[in-house]
Image (cartoon, rainbow, N blue to C red):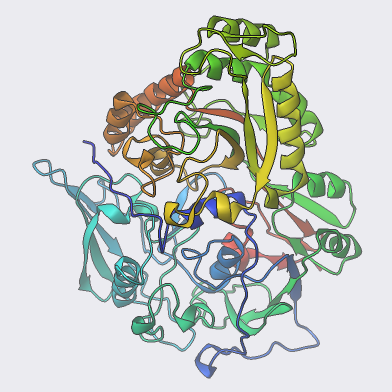
Length: 585
């Protein structure tokens, strides 16, 4: 049974921050200074002589410990060290309980679906042995408090699936039920995994609101470590939480996170043994460090981000492809020609040091990578033929095609447009953009290369956001989804409702009733049906090409050889298992 989702607008809370994260290139916001937390969160100092301590290097301060709000990735790093969610996802995509005593399922009675209404109730049982650092038990009251803070219309935030929740009721101190107005397949990670933690009702000030409460700067821990000190622009110090619920964990006495803006300095610190963990090792860094005797590079077993071209099917500066079709990309043959003209292997083997993997369908990750969509061929001659068929020919011999009987452009108009990307990513994306421009030029298409700040590209329409206002022709960057369920990600990019400015990220304005139907059908717990629906989506996307996927980018972290237990996790950040890290004597 399907459900029609109604996603929150991007203004204020915004899906903008969710997308900016996924590129992992946010500029550092200004931060107020922070001193040590109150005595309730203060841990005893480890014995200085015998303390096991590691140093992590990151380029900027985390915005806070609340990864929902700014989600730079560095907030998730510190959040997972101090705060827990109901569940998490391991590097292989398996959901496991954290604060939850077990995973609710239909089989164990935790999930009930009303066949008459299609509504779903999920009953959660909490562990009874988890406390906050001040000794207060973690209870269902904390979960309800977190839920109410998230849904507050003025100070709350959007998280995936929250639109389908119609209420959360407490059963007792360690049980509660979440009521959905339809079936939500990703219910297991609604209050967990990468972004969402449970916050303490007795410590956080509800009146300050979810987006700005003080406890997001000075958190009360229930995780493996306790924030001891935060010197903005310099370092954060974490100490072992003696009340952590897992016996014998964490294995480290302290963790220091140093703010080191210069990438070369961070890499040098790793080589010289002055740092133990470098979060998000780029392809260049991974290549530099792969043979270093003091450093290991942990690569996630699966990829998430897919570099892609976003083609605007509406004319630049508009958002309606029916009344104002894009003169260049409205014809699917042109979109097919662009895909055929790009040599993905040449890009990945040079710019991305062989770490990137060709990707041509959204359904390339387990368990839904069963659709057998054939890989498109790099074939410039086929691209030229498709362009000719679509009415784009070079009549004056200048190497740039003009419209002659083409679908939506005026005769004589040059095939010339802007290819835009965002500047914060750095050299690999810039070089990729240049290579794509050269490859398109080889088939008679002139792509003028431009860059913008991500904050401008992904702002809401009221702020003049380039994509929400449709003020682009083709954009280039990567995106993907957390966890093992692509449905919310596919909805935000390909549902017709999501093509309305500020209602999602269908920025190409591709509206297809069949896709809408398939997306709604995939909101089910019937995995056989979902597999079929996802494969139908994959075939439709391959035929229509509203986006052109190119390759997946690396998800890796570098760590010193004296530190064990580190495992890059495409479904989260490196601190997902910080309690398991150990110093090798």
